[in-house]
Length: 244
Ligand SMILES: Nc1ncnc2c1ncn2[C@@H]1O[C@H](COP(=O)(O)OP(=O)(O)OP(=O)(O)O)[C@@H](O)[C@H]1O
Ligand SMILES: [Mg+2]
Image (cartoon, rainbow, N blue to C red; front, side, top):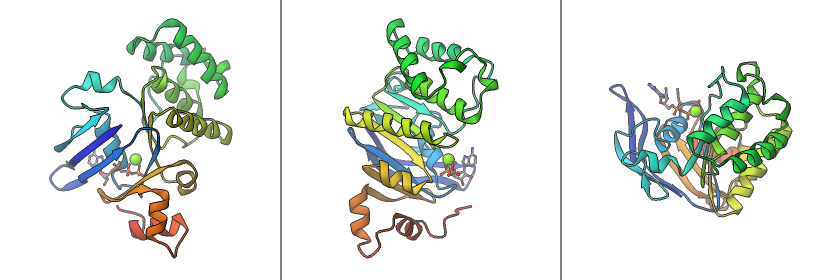
């Protein structure tokens, strides 16, 4: 569970990327975080994961404050950022072992994880190659594996389906569903409304740094009873789309 309490983040003197945001990510559900380009999704996810510090407000991961107790809070989640171009000089398997070491994952658990998920993503033949030689989608897959190898209860993913082929995207969606079904929480950002519509139990819509909607897909649709298209509802809530 994630609790976001009155969080604000301003860049420079006047660019308020997130303004007084109040929302939660419940356990046992997939929460989709939706908004146009520049709306404040990545900034929010970076504050939730302790990469950026809020100017005001606080964020609790399973009850632990990410700013006050970062180590304890960071053990609770796995974060897949929107840029999978990290650790390029490491081989895939070296990166996975590095992440497993960092989180003290026992040998047997990590081997089982690596074997299962590299097969699910179809990259078992590439684990011995440097990440530098991977395609964008392969980098995305290895970063997802690295983020989840310690079996965190909270999954946080920034545009995770970008660059994944249909098979891998299907696998990741299944993994997210399995994780939520086991009572844990999944938060992911997306632009793809069809994905949100099919996958999410819960929807959070952000526009120009402000939370515009927070609730279930059914609640969102019933609010706009005459219009059942999520795309139209989204366009209505987010204006003309672009924020910059
Ligand atoms: N480091 C930074 N310095 C200054 N402004 C920033 C910085 N990071 C983000 N911003 C601004 O904050 C706003 C929100 O950006 P953010 O990256 O959170 O949007 P987003 O919703 O993730 O967009 P996208 O869908 O394009 O990924 C934008 O106006 C952006 O220009
Ligand atoms: Mg972003």
